[in-house]
Length: 256
Image (cartoon, rainbow, N blue to C red):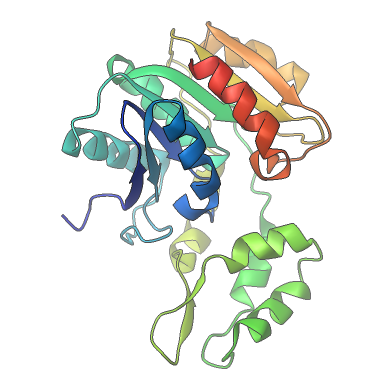
């Protein structure tokens, strides 16, 4: 099935889906899968459409990504699942849990809220579109281009994870940049106002991140009345990468 999401599956037990953020992939969460698996979970690290090793498509919005996750769960006959979603993956997880709540037991949303977010990846888009793989023959040359637009080392390393050898001579991005260029608005879409999920939900934010503000709490509770909020101090939007130990401890205590 070419339109089944690519995944890495580890462990036995209760199903736990982990959904990466925009421009990410399942690889970003590899270090977590053995930890959750050791706690009795069958961990499914997903690559969303147009990301990682999953299929590419001109359709790219939360509705189709949510349907992809449903098709994946049906294919593997997964029920009573827990989901962890980061950033854009958190939006997918929220839409999935509020649409197919009978399938979901617990939800963890990492550093994103249900509200609308204005496009804010302009510098990253500019950097990625400046990369010409017909001219650049080494990973070092690609990183040098990114460096001229993105001073932050961590962000560059994150993007470089998606640079791979399409052929022995040609580098490329694993993600579908042309489709992202045409769908910048859809990434920030809000959760529909009427969507609700009444089961246990954990929102977890970085103390230095501005993605979930104190003023967002009322809106979060509108959609997720059984939610609580945890903050990991001194980390930004990539909270799971910056403090993996506390992220794991917060999430496993909730999931258990």
